[in-house]
Image (cartoon, rainbow, N blue to C red; front, side, top):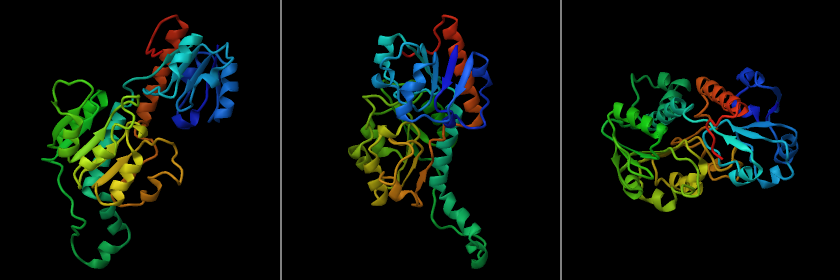
Length: 315
């Protein structure tokens, strides 16, 4: 049984792949260019992938591949239709990154609302010492207690963000595909209009692509903080960048992008240094503990498949 990891660099160099090595002959590539994907898939039984796109062209003529093990919850990078046609099993991993993503969501909200980088810099650059005043209170910041936190997408991550927001004293409202229990459900326009903080926790699908567009952004408060730790393409990135640059939005925290890494031509590149912009390199899911859980689940998915069982199958 040959198992091939196509983009191991996306999992972190510190991750021990021993759980996969125990299942068969393991081949590891740090990264795989699109032009090389078909050849590397052609002579393997199980492919372990994270960001690599698997489509009809990639699998054309492939007669050996039996399983694709996605090392993530989202699997929009895999053409499930062609996998079904070719009898290739596809599995994903659920729930492994909830605590990590919630932690980064909260960190973004606190950093942006508290203006923490600006305050830290006044000490680091010597301004605080030179001014001789015991405390500096600019830029002005506000408490989160009493604010309204709107959650777009109320799955495991959204629900845990809600519990953290309530602990801070926030009113929590949510928009989801279907009404959820234990939270105040509102439609998307209402959420955009009244929320002080908006965080997005949606999978990418035809229904969610571009769900936060120019119209929704225009509805948001001028001092609202918008956070996206889901998928870049669920938002209109150009509209978000314009709203921040023009002072029509209080700030953004974004960990995911429609193109990763984003190029200098991306709308966010021009605003990346702004005080009210917090951009991170798709790391919210990746606390060490989360990555270890992910790998353990991937190994369990492969072991189940080899034993003729179905586990976390999505095809």
